[in-house]
Length: 492
Image 1 (cartoon, helix red, strand yellow):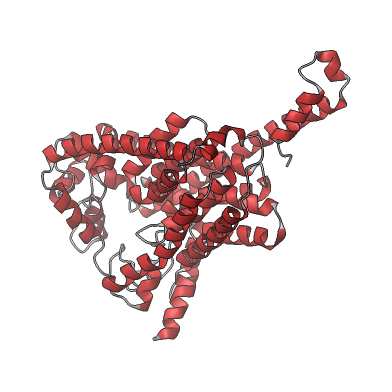
Image 2 (cartoon, helix red, strand yellow; image 1 turned 180 degrees about the vertical axis):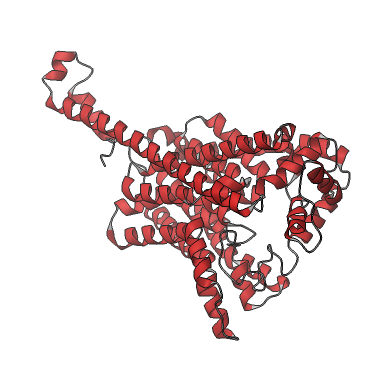
């Protein structure tokens, strides 16, 4: 693929042919080369965007086919939709009985307690999202289910595809080939997200778009709103990305604080509204979360509930530490303690180092996989790995061993959090008999917990590269550096 000319090349061209007339351009052979490169670059970008859109469309097709075969078991958007229906009908969205009544009134299947339909009802009746998310999704509750579902899925697909295209556009300046393959693979394996409509799709895409707006210094106001909505819907997905901008520098800090202000306004309005419907919403939410993660159920990170690999598996580090000791009082703090030093070192580097675009993308590439490790996350949250694509391309363009390591580790993290590879691993691991004792635990971690291991390796590698680029004092190059001089010089 032909890469677009960098800023230095464009400036050199303008010096040799400073805006002259057509005859002067005709006498300069270099102008034809530059125009040909620009045309080829535009053509390449259009083709890549179309291919990325095609990947998303294929993912939607097989995802909808799977959802139809599952007969409604893929319920992610239904959880928030019926909560929104409760809100617009002035009912308590956090009361399981109220939510279940709305579900049944809207045509939900009723089934005996031992049947699968009962489990479906209980999942729908467990509202575990914050009031700010319920407030933002409430307009969808005004629509009938088919219209609301279609509109939400459309927003999810457009958002994730746009975020992927923006990340590739950054990576295209360094190594478009590997970046394209990784991005297209990630999109093609988003069928569960596109058909199920988990709010992570909207939250993650807005977070990635906001990061692009802030770093590239374009559509900043739009980026502030995107980041604010992402925080309001899923703060445990966007929180550490937001933290980077808070501690990265003066201008970026202002943008992060403006995003937080918008989120706070949304939260205050949501709390005032929800409090009228549910005065005890906090205690009810806590109860819903506890019911949602009962030991041995689908949402338990312990080994009893995670005996196989699957497309809906939990991918955080608690699934590994629980193998060592299946006790929440052990495996939760253990996961936090393992991630805390990495997070502290990352924050130290960010605070002590001047901003540059290259440092920003590598810093985000370190924090994106780290975000997924301490607390509850599933593969659809891992679309946040889009933020690792630009750094992977930068490292690949430099060659040497770390280029291959970057592509290999980024690829492993994306593969082991993608739908189709996890489905194949699920088939291969079905019926596997593990020995008891430490040997069985080691096999469980290596074969049945590939995602947290791959994410941990990627986070550690990118953090090492972040430390290296910060210590080397690498300055920004290219045509985007000038726009960030105020960020570097006005740091406080």
